[in-house]
Length: 87
Image (cartoon, rainbow, N blue to C red; front, side, top):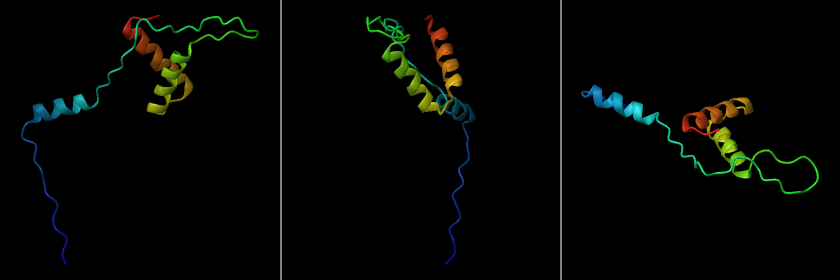
């Protein structure tokens, strides 16, 4: 029994094909401008926390999502915050 030959598809609309490839690589990140990035002082003894739990969770989500190292993650988050106009 012979193996059937695979179908060949020819691209005829290169403009649409290129646009769809560009759209596939797009990334949309929503950041809340009212979110507190710094942790509130809780009055307990010891070193105070610097960042809030939500900020740490965002960083860890980006780290796991893109399989990044810690320094790469801080760079990505810093550039996202800069593009969003946040400090």
